[in-house]
Length: 259
Ligand SMILES: [Zn+2]
Image 1 (tube, rainbow, N blue to C red):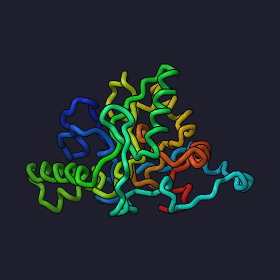
Image 2: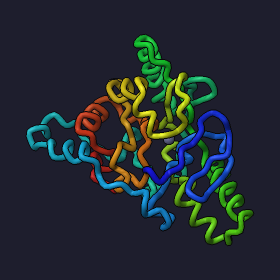
Image 3: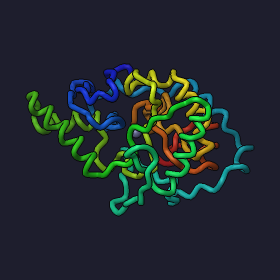
Image 4: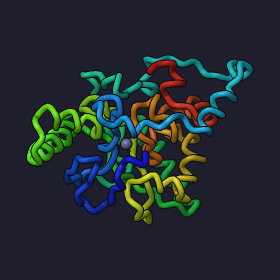
Protein backbone atom coordinates (compact mmCIF):
# COMPACT_ATOMS: atom_id res chain seq x y z
CA UNK A 1 0.00 0.00 0.00
CA UNK A 2 2.95 2.24 0.51
CA UNK A 3 3.29 2.40 -3.22
CA UNK A 4 0.18 4.47 -3.54
CA UNK A 5 0.60 8.16 -3.47
CA UNK A 6 -1.53 9.87 -0.90
CA UNK A 7 -4.58 11.59 -2.18
CA UNK A 8 -6.03 14.88 -1.06
CA UNK A 9 -9.67 14.62 -0.25
CA UNK A 10 -12.52 16.97 -1.05
CA UNK A 11 -10.42 19.25 -3.14
CA UNK A 12 -11.11 17.82 -6.53
CA UNK A 13 -7.45 18.41 -7.12
CA UNK A 14 -5.19 16.38 -9.26
CA UNK A 15 -4.72 12.92 -7.95
CA UNK A 16 -1.63 10.95 -8.56
CA UNK A 17 -1.70 7.20 -8.63
CA UNK A 18 1.59 5.74 -9.66
CA UNK A 19 2.32 7.49 -12.90
CA UNK A 20 -1.33 8.03 -13.58
CA UNK A 21 -2.37 11.58 -12.95
CA UNK A 22 -5.91 12.65 -13.37
CA UNK A 23 -8.51 14.97 -12.00
CA UNK A 24 -10.91 13.28 -9.71
CA UNK A 25 -13.81 15.42 -8.71
CA UNK A 26 -15.52 12.20 -7.82
CA UNK A 27 -13.99 10.63 -4.82
CA UNK A 28 -13.00 7.29 -3.85
CA UNK A 29 -12.82 3.82 -4.80
CA UNK A 30 -12.12 5.09 -8.13
CA UNK A 31 -8.91 4.10 -6.64
CA UNK A 32 -10.26 0.67 -5.96
CA UNK A 33 -7.73 -1.08 -7.98
CA UNK A 34 -7.13 -4.32 -9.65
CA UNK A 35 -3.53 -5.12 -8.82
CA UNK A 36 -3.54 -8.20 -11.01
CA UNK A 37 -5.41 -6.59 -13.84
CA UNK A 38 -2.91 -4.06 -14.99
CA UNK A 39 0.14 -6.20 -14.65
CA UNK A 40 2.18 -3.18 -13.69
CA UNK A 41 1.56 -2.87 -10.00
CA UNK A 42 3.12 -5.97 -8.57
CA UNK A 43 4.48 -3.95 -5.69
CA UNK A 44 1.06 -3.02 -4.41
CA UNK A 45 0.01 -6.48 -3.34
CA UNK A 46 0.52 -6.98 0.34
CA UNK A 47 0.79 -10.35 1.91
CA UNK A 48 -1.95 -11.19 4.38
CA UNK A 49 -1.48 -9.35 7.63
CA UNK A 50 -0.84 -11.05 10.89
CA UNK A 51 -4.25 -10.00 12.10
CA UNK A 52 -5.80 -11.61 9.10
CA UNK A 53 -3.97 -14.89 9.59
CA UNK A 54 -4.80 -14.98 13.26
CA UNK A 55 -8.43 -14.42 12.55
CA UNK A 56 -8.51 -17.14 9.98
CA UNK A 57 -6.82 -19.65 12.20
CA UNK A 58 -9.28 -18.89 14.98
CA UNK A 59 -12.08 -20.27 12.88
CA UNK A 60 -13.12 -23.57 14.36
CA UNK A 61 -15.62 -26.22 13.41
CA UNK A 62 -17.54 -25.56 16.61
CA UNK A 63 -18.74 -22.30 15.10
CA UNK A 64 -20.43 -24.01 12.21
CA UNK A 65 -23.64 -24.66 14.06
CA UNK A 66 -24.20 -20.93 14.59
CA UNK A 67 -23.47 -20.02 10.98
CA UNK A 68 -26.49 -18.82 9.03
CA UNK A 69 -27.19 -20.41 5.70
CA UNK A 70 -25.06 -18.88 2.99
CA UNK A 71 -27.01 -18.57 -0.23
CA UNK A 72 -24.70 -17.00 -2.78
CA UNK A 73 -27.63 -15.91 -4.92
CA UNK A 74 -29.12 -13.76 -2.16
CA UNK A 75 -29.08 -10.11 -3.22
CA UNK A 76 -27.24 -9.07 -0.08
CA UNK A 77 -24.43 -11.57 -0.70
CA UNK A 78 -23.82 -10.54 -4.31
CA UNK A 79 -20.10 -10.74 -5.02
CA UNK A 80 -18.63 -8.06 -7.26
CA UNK A 81 -14.87 -7.95 -7.64
CA UNK A 82 -12.26 -7.93 -10.42
CA UNK A 83 -13.23 -11.53 -11.24
CA UNK A 84 -16.99 -11.10 -10.92
CA UNK A 85 -18.63 -8.27 -12.81
CA UNK A 86 -21.94 -6.85 -11.77
CA UNK A 87 -24.88 -8.57 -13.52
CA UNK A 88 -25.84 -6.61 -16.64
CA UNK A 89 -29.49 -6.37 -15.67
CA UNK A 90 -28.81 -5.11 -12.16
CA UNK A 91 -30.66 -1.89 -11.59
CA UNK A 92 -31.05 -1.19 -7.90
CA UNK A 93 -33.95 0.89 -6.68
CA UNK A 94 -32.28 3.70 -4.79
CA UNK A 95 -33.08 5.70 -1.69
CA UNK A 96 -31.28 8.66 -0.16
CA UNK A 97 -28.83 8.09 2.68
CA UNK A 98 -27.03 11.42 3.13
CA UNK A 99 -26.90 14.53 0.99
CA UNK A 100 -27.00 13.56 -2.66
CA UNK A 101 -25.93 10.03 -1.98
CA UNK A 102 -28.21 7.07 -2.55
CA UNK A 103 -28.01 3.35 -1.90
CA UNK A 104 -30.22 0.36 -2.59
CA UNK A 105 -33.51 1.12 -0.88
CA UNK A 106 -33.26 -2.13 1.10
CA UNK A 107 -29.96 -0.92 2.58
CA UNK A 108 -30.50 2.81 2.93
CA UNK A 109 -32.47 2.58 6.21
CA UNK A 110 -29.62 0.67 7.85
CA UNK A 111 -27.06 3.19 6.65
CA UNK A 112 -29.15 6.05 7.97
CA UNK A 113 -29.60 4.23 11.25
CA UNK A 114 -25.85 3.70 11.53
CA UNK A 115 -25.11 7.35 10.77
CA UNK A 116 -27.62 8.41 13.46
CA UNK A 117 -26.18 6.01 16.02
CA UNK A 118 -22.66 7.25 15.36
CA UNK A 119 -23.81 10.82 15.81
CA UNK A 120 -25.15 9.95 19.24
CA UNK A 121 -21.65 8.76 20.07
CA UNK A 122 -20.16 12.02 18.79
CA UNK A 123 -19.01 10.61 15.44
CA UNK A 124 -20.04 12.57 12.36
CA UNK A 125 -19.96 9.98 9.61
CA UNK A 126 -19.65 11.51 6.18
CA UNK A 127 -20.68 9.63 3.08
CA UNK A 128 -18.35 10.23 0.14
CA UNK A 129 -19.50 7.83 -2.52
CA UNK A 130 -22.27 5.30 -2.88
CA UNK A 131 -24.04 4.06 -5.98
CA UNK A 132 -22.32 4.59 -9.30
CA UNK A 133 -23.57 3.76 -12.75
CA UNK A 134 -21.58 1.75 -15.23
CA UNK A 135 -21.41 4.85 -17.42
CA UNK A 136 -20.00 6.90 -14.58
CA UNK A 137 -17.24 4.38 -13.93
CA UNK A 138 -16.58 4.19 -17.68
CA UNK A 139 -16.18 7.97 -17.69
CA UNK A 140 -13.61 7.78 -14.90
CA UNK A 141 -11.76 5.08 -16.77
CA UNK A 142 -11.81 6.86 -20.13
CA UNK A 143 -10.71 10.16 -18.62
CA UNK A 144 -7.70 8.48 -17.11
CA UNK A 145 -6.78 6.76 -20.37
CA UNK A 146 -7.07 10.05 -22.23
CA UNK A 147 -4.88 11.81 -19.69
CA UNK A 148 -2.17 9.18 -19.95
CA UNK A 149 -2.24 9.28 -23.72
CA UNK A 150 -1.79 13.02 -23.62
CA UNK A 151 1.34 12.35 -21.59
CA UNK A 152 2.74 10.23 -24.37
CA UNK A 153 1.51 6.70 -23.73
CA UNK A 154 0.08 4.54 -26.47
CA UNK A 155 -3.58 3.52 -26.20
CA UNK A 156 -2.55 0.05 -25.08
CA UNK A 157 -0.16 1.32 -22.44
CA UNK A 158 -2.69 3.83 -21.16
CA UNK A 159 -5.42 1.23 -20.80
CA UNK A 160 -3.09 -1.16 -19.03
CA UNK A 161 -1.93 1.49 -16.59
CA UNK A 162 -5.46 2.72 -15.97
CA UNK A 163 -6.74 -0.79 -15.26
CA UNK A 164 -4.12 -1.08 -12.55
CA UNK A 165 -5.47 1.95 -10.73
CA UNK A 166 -9.13 2.49 -11.56
CA UNK A 167 -11.78 -0.19 -11.19
CA UNK A 168 -12.71 -1.52 -14.60
CA UNK A 169 -16.34 -0.58 -15.33
CA UNK A 170 -18.59 -3.39 -14.19
CA UNK A 171 -16.23 -4.58 -11.47
CA UNK A 172 -16.78 -1.81 -8.94
CA UNK A 173 -18.89 -2.80 -5.96
CA UNK A 174 -20.35 0.69 -6.11
CA UNK A 175 -22.48 -0.45 -9.06
CA UNK A 176 -24.54 -2.56 -6.68
CA UNK A 177 -25.87 0.20 -4.44
CA UNK A 178 -24.78 -1.97 -1.50
CA UNK A 179 -21.48 -0.20 -0.82
CA UNK A 180 -20.48 3.17 0.54
CA UNK A 181 -17.28 5.05 1.12
CA UNK A 182 -17.52 6.68 4.51
CA UNK A 183 -15.20 8.92 6.45
CA UNK A 184 -16.04 11.65 8.94
CA UNK A 185 -16.80 15.31 8.56
CA UNK A 186 -13.73 16.43 10.50
CA UNK A 187 -11.23 14.28 8.62
CA UNK A 188 -8.73 16.23 6.57
CA UNK A 189 -6.19 13.51 5.98
CA UNK A 190 -7.36 12.58 2.52
CA UNK A 191 -8.29 9.22 1.12
CA UNK A 192 -5.46 7.44 2.81
CA UNK A 193 -4.89 4.51 5.12
CA UNK A 194 -4.39 7.06 7.88
CA UNK A 195 -8.17 7.21 8.19
CA UNK A 196 -7.84 3.91 10.08
CA UNK A 197 -6.32 5.88 12.96
CA UNK A 198 -9.43 7.98 13.49
CA UNK A 199 -12.17 7.55 16.08
CA UNK A 200 -14.63 7.40 13.20
CA UNK A 201 -12.95 4.34 11.72
CA UNK A 202 -12.70 2.70 15.11
CA UNK A 203 -16.41 3.31 15.61
CA UNK A 204 -17.25 1.92 12.18
CA UNK A 205 -15.07 -1.12 12.75
CA UNK A 206 -16.71 -1.79 16.10
CA UNK A 207 -20.32 -1.15 15.11
CA UNK A 208 -20.82 -1.62 11.37
CA UNK A 209 -21.91 -5.24 11.71
CA UNK A 210 -24.77 -4.20 13.99
CA UNK A 211 -26.27 -2.49 10.96
CA UNK A 212 -25.39 -5.24 8.51
CA UNK A 213 -22.19 -3.74 7.09
CA UNK A 214 -18.68 -5.14 6.78
CA UNK A 215 -15.29 -3.59 6.19
CA UNK A 216 -14.98 -4.86 2.65
CA UNK A 217 -11.25 -4.50 1.96
CA UNK A 218 -9.46 -5.22 5.24
CA UNK A 219 -5.79 -4.66 5.76
CA UNK A 220 -3.69 -7.42 4.27
CA UNK A 221 -6.44 -8.86 2.08
CA UNK A 222 -5.43 -7.39 -1.27
CA UNK A 223 -4.40 -10.75 -2.67
CA UNK A 224 -7.86 -12.06 -1.97
CA UNK A 225 -10.06 -9.10 -2.86
CA UNK A 226 -7.97 -7.69 -5.70
CA UNK A 227 -8.49 -4.30 -4.11
CA UNK A 228 -6.10 -2.25 -2.01
CA UNK A 229 -6.71 -1.66 1.70
CA UNK A 230 -9.64 0.71 2.00
CA UNK A 231 -10.61 1.44 5.59
CA UNK A 232 -13.43 3.68 4.30
CA UNK A 233 -15.31 1.22 2.10
CA UNK A 234 -18.21 -0.57 3.77
CA UNK A 235 -20.57 -3.06 2.21
CA UNK A 236 -23.99 -4.28 3.28
CA UNK A 237 -24.44 -8.04 3.64
CA UNK A 238 -27.06 -8.18 6.40
CA UNK A 239 -26.54 -8.35 10.12
CA UNK A 240 -26.30 -12.12 10.60
CA UNK A 241 -23.58 -12.46 7.97
CA UNK A 242 -21.82 -9.22 8.89
CA UNK A 243 -21.38 -10.21 12.50
CA UNK A 244 -19.61 -13.41 11.53
CA UNK A 245 -17.46 -11.80 8.85
CA UNK A 246 -16.33 -8.98 11.14
CA UNK A 247 -15.76 -11.28 14.09
CA UNK A 248 -13.59 -13.59 12.03
CA UNK A 249 -11.89 -10.72 10.24
CA UNK A 250 -12.37 -12.36 6.87
CA UNK A 251 -13.31 -11.08 3.44
CA UNK A 252 -16.58 -11.61 1.61
CA UNK A 253 -14.68 -13.83 -0.82
CA UNK A 254 -13.55 -16.10 1.98
CA UNK A 255 -17.00 -16.14 3.58
CA UNK A 256 -18.62 -17.17 0.31
CA UNK A 257 -15.80 -19.48 -0.68
CA UNK A 258 -15.40 -17.76 -4.05
CA UNK A 259 -12.57 -15.73 -5.48
ZN1 LIG B 1 -15.60 2.31 -2.26
